[in-house]
Every structure is written in structure tokens, then in C-alpha cells.
Length: 568
Image 1 (tube, rainbow, N blue to C red):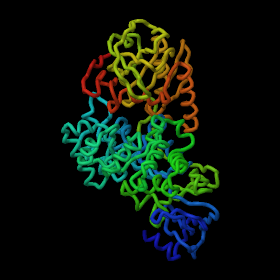
Image 2 (image 1 turned 90 degrees about the horizontal axis):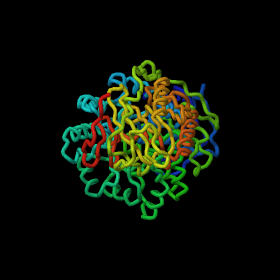
Image 3 (image 1 turned 45 degrees about the horizontal axis):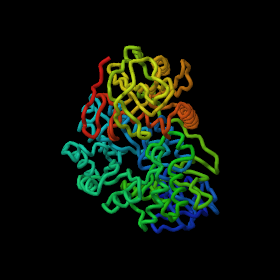
Image 4 (image 1 turned 90 degrees about the vertical axis):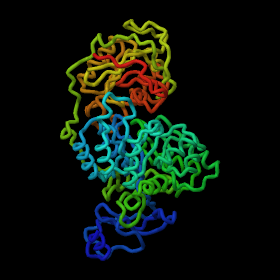
């Protein structure tokens, strides 16, 4: 801080000056002309003067250019086939320079000491990487009490890189009297950190109760009316544009039609979209949609930067072009085009004049024993025994309802005239399995096998047991991933070399592979838009109505175990 003052006094030169630009001042919501001085990772001056001491300073003429704060994604799930470093590098290229990330996979993968070491490493990345503290696993585990011990939850809450609690998918338990959850929320609030809710379809009564119990924000609105309901109760509301719920255009249209003129309790989120959805960027796309829908231009940029920073009580570090803030700055050619020509993240060029700059690899995954899965078992015909009378029927990409199985499921190959498939959730250690059927995923495909799931266990879907066995064999050889097999032929492999959950290569390569996955599944009768999430959420008990989990098949609403898991 003293060094920053020395820059102002001319004793030390700034490292970079963005000269003669027009910048968005978030405090008066106006475009102003001036010079921006940067020293290393911080903005130290914004105004009419150029530095007296310019020795070694990089000076970039921004005449005719527009400067806005780096965009903030306040609700990232950085493990949707991609890994967090890969996502951060990709996001930054289109101006999203801050990610607030789910910590759930760290809880599954690493002990607390190693997890905190990863967080420390990410703090040195040019993109600002912050995290949530989860209170629940959003599924029914066999040992979730080991994953969420009060001592560990509180340590996460107190970590300086953790800026909020949540997202709270177990809110029904809280309403039912779970005082451990309430205690964790209270401790989060004592740290002056907000609590993110997850309240799809919640009534005013429920939202009011959750506000009283400490929830600050929610991102589950799917109509403008639901957004207004939350705003009126004092919530900060995330407007979602994701691969499952691309609701943003409709939300903006309905909010403007409702006469909303105050936008400072809103933010944008892509809510952990799958890779191909991010091909053109993250929050830059949301800002673009908002501007095209008629939102005031200045407000669109603030919803994508300053307002989420203020909600997270991080406005002294993020979300504005002002002295003392991290030097996250996007340089635009037009105020109505949020795709940046140049991007600065912590004072480092990510894109300069349209040319992407190299970002050094930061995370050494081997140091954390995160590599290919080493499996000492493989799928055999004894695991492929199906007799449960209740299956899961797809209502959409992620919602499943129970149905009575009416076909013979003891055969090796289910008939193509039905959309019923074999479905098996198999323990990643090979100790237990849950076997049933899935209706509506495909009417023809032999098999798809995935080590990518919300629990990290293996999912098998398909009509042909022989193809399932081949997919399982190949999955073991890969050390984790997604494999599609049909009529004895491997059609696609997506290796997930980081514990069977995350891709290790470039985001562009992963995007191409996910597109190929979608093409194959569409050809085999998959009728929805996001098969990656369909597979991932099969075990997620925060979604209705029935789920296949490590405990067995569960009726979510009744919290009843319909059929328990079988030991292998």
C-alpha cells in the first residue's frame, strides 16, 4: 500500500498506463475520459493526469476505446468436465476475470489440508478465484456425516478465499428443524459472508422463512415474477443463462415490462454450464443479451461486475475501475459490444489487441494425487442383474419421475421400440451397485459409461449388456471418462484424466468432444439439450422426483428409500 502511494508521488513508476480511454465509473454510472495507472496487480490512479515518472512504464493509447471492470461470475461450478484452471483461462479470454466457485469436488477428492493448498495456489492465478463453503452434498451418500463435520465446515467458512456459504440445496432439512445447518449459517453470517440459497419454485412463505433463517441470495428464478418476488423480500437475485436454463432473455423482458428500474440487487450467472455452452464466453454473453433486450447499457455492465462484488462485500477489491481495486479491466471497441478487444487480469494481459496471450500452467495436479483412476475391479455380468420394478423416467434434462417397469429386463438386449434402457450406478470402489431402468434417454444406443457424476461413482446407461461391459472395460483402461459404445464398437471417448471427473487438456478440445457426444446421443434418440447434466444429476436429491443414489433409489419428496443399494 505504501508502494502504491509512492507511485502517486512519482517516486516509483506505474507498470502500465491506459491513456486517453473512456471508462465506466460505477459510482456515478457515467462514461468518463481519463488515464488509468496500474502498478503490478492494482489500479492506483484514475483521472486526468499522466504520471511524472514513466521509466519502464508500458503506455497503451486507448483513444476511442471504452474501459469497463472485469466481469464476475458469482456462481460457478468449475468441474463440469473441465477443471477450474482450464475454465478460468477460458473465461478470462472473453472478459470474465473473477469466478466464485463451488467447493464440492474438493470435498470429495481431497483432505482439508490439500484442498486449502489448492486454494492457495489458485490465489496466484491472474483470474480472481474465490470459493463457496458447501453445507450439503446435494445427494444421499453412505458417509455424508464424514464429509460434512462441523469442524471442517467452519474451517472452510473461515478461509479467506471462501466468500460465501451455500449453495443451500438442503433447505427442506433446515425448515424441518436441522439446527446444525442453522448453526453453520449463523457462523457464516458472523464472518460477514452471505449465504446463497437454492430455492426453485419457492413460495413467498418459504422465501420469507429462508430469509429469516439467514439466506441472502438465490439464483433459481425462472420468470420475471419470481425475480420480483425475491427482490421484494430483500434477496440478491442471480439472473441465469445456463445450458439447462437459458432464461435470461425472458427474465430481462419480463422485468422491464414489470417496470423495474433499480437493478443493484441483480447479478448474472451461467450456473456451471457444460463446455460447449461456453464457446463464446461467460458473463460477456449475459451482458450482450441484457443490452439487446433493452436494459440500460451502464446497468448491464454493473450487473456483470460491481453489483455482485458489492453483494459479496468485495467492492473494495473488485467490480470497479478505481484506486486500490484489482486491475481487472476489459477494453472495448463499442459500449454496446461487451466482447473485449483486450483483457487485463490482475494487471496481466490475457488478450492484447485481439491477440490471446499465453497463461502459464499453475496447478500441478500430481502434487495432489489427482490423476487417472486406478481401478482394481471391472464390470462383469454379475453386476448386470436387473429386477427392480420401478424405473426413472425423464421429464426433461434433469427431472426424473418414477414409473412401473412393464418390459422384461432380465434379457441381454432391451428392444429398440421402447425408450427403456438399463441404468446402473456403480460404486467407484466396486463395493455396491444400484440397478434399475431409465426411460427417455435413448431408444437405440448400446451403452454410455461415465465416471463423471455428482457422487464420483460410475453411471452406465444402455440397451445392450455386452456394450455396457465393453464400455466399462474401456473406461477402466482410460482411468476415467465418458465412453460411448454401440454394437461392439467404441464410437467416442472423452478421457477425464483428473480423477475421472475433469478433463486435463485445452478447453477448445473439450468443447469439440462434448459437441461430438451430443451428436451421437441425438442420433440415438436423446431428446433433450444437455446429456452431460442428465448423467451428472441422476444422483442429485435437490431435484424431483426420484433419484438413484449411493444409498439406493430414493423418493426425494418423501425422503424414502424405495430400494436399497446392493453389495457387489
